[in-house]
Amino acid sequence: MTPLETILKTRITAQGPLSVSEYMTICLFHPEHGYYSTRDPFGTEGDFVTAPEISQMFGELIGLTLAQTWMDQGQPAQIALVELGPGRGTLMADILRTLRAVPDFAKACDVHFVEASTRLKAVQKETLQGYEPIWHDTVDELPESLPIYAIANEFFDALPIRQMVRDGEEWRERQVGLADDALAFGLSGPAPLTALAHRFEDTKDDDLVETCAPAPAILQAIASRIEANGGAALIFDYGDWRSLGDTLQAVHAHEKVDALFKPGQSDLTAHVDFEALVADLACSHSRLTPQGIFLERLGITDRAQTLAKNLSGAALDQHIAAHRRLTHPEEMGTLFKTLALFPKDANPPAGYET
Image (cartoon, rainbow, N blue to C red; front, side):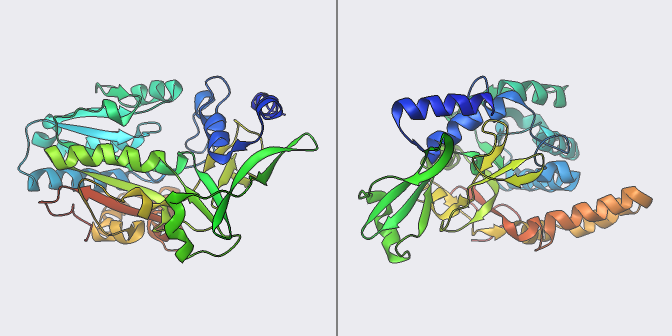
C-alpha cells in the first residue's frame, strides 16, 4: 500500500466517495505524495516517453512553424514563447536550438513556462541552461499585453476529469470509494446535469461521458490573449473530437495498469475532448488533424532522410523507429491529434487547415 492510498482511504472513510476528478487531483498533485511532486516521469527511466523525447525532429518542426507564424503576423518585436506543462524542457530546448536559424525571432522571445511541479521546475532549469525562463503556476499569470506563441504537448490529458454515466434523462457520477477496505469504483445517485443536456442526442443508457472543466478555461485564457495581441497556440494530445466512453488510464513503469493501482506512483491521464476544449473561444481554431498528417505536411520525412545520411548501425535504426513512432497510423500518428489557435483576422499556422 502506498502512503497516498492510506490517505485516500482515511478521507473516504471520513467524508465519503471521491469524484474521479478529486481522485486524479490528489494522486497527481498531492504536495508530498503526488505523482508529479515526487518524480521525473519522463523518458526511459520514467513511466512514459513524449514526442520530444522520441526525436529532435518534433521540436524542430514546431519551432519553424512558430517562426513562420511570427513572420506572417508582422514580426512583433517582443513575444511570449510559452509552453504549458514543459516536462523536462526538452521540447523548448529543441525549439530554441532551431530558432538560432531565425535570429530575429529568437531575439524577440521571452520564454515562459506554466508548471505546477517544483521538482520539474528544477529539471527544466537544468535543461535550459543559458536561458532565463519565467515560471508561472497558472496561465492567468502570463503576460496580458504581449503576443502569445504557445505549445501544449500532452498537457490537457493530465487535467482531472469527471465521468458521468447516463441513466435515463439524468446522469450518475462515477466515484472512487471503498469495497472490502480496497479502493473501488462506484456510482452516485442520479441527478440532472444541464452541461450535458446536449449529449442526450448521441448517448444511450449506461454510456459514459467525460468532462474536464479546467481545460476550456485554461485555453480560453490563452485564446483571449491571442485574439487581443496576436500569436498562436499549438495543441498536441491524444483524444478525439467528442468524448464517449471510459478513457481514464494509468501507467506505471511503462506498463498500463488499473487506474486504482499504486495511487501517487502511477501516472493518470484521459483522452482529450477537443470539441469541448475549443468551444466558444475568443479566437479562431484550425481543424483537428492527426499528428502524423500534420508532421508530414511540414516535411518530417525529408528532414528524417537528411538526418539519416549521417547515421548508421543502431543509431540509424533508432532514428527510423523514431520517425515511424511519431507519424505511423498504428503508433502516435493517428492516436495523437493537433489543432492550432490563431487570431480571427489571421491565417492558420503552417501545417493546419480550417
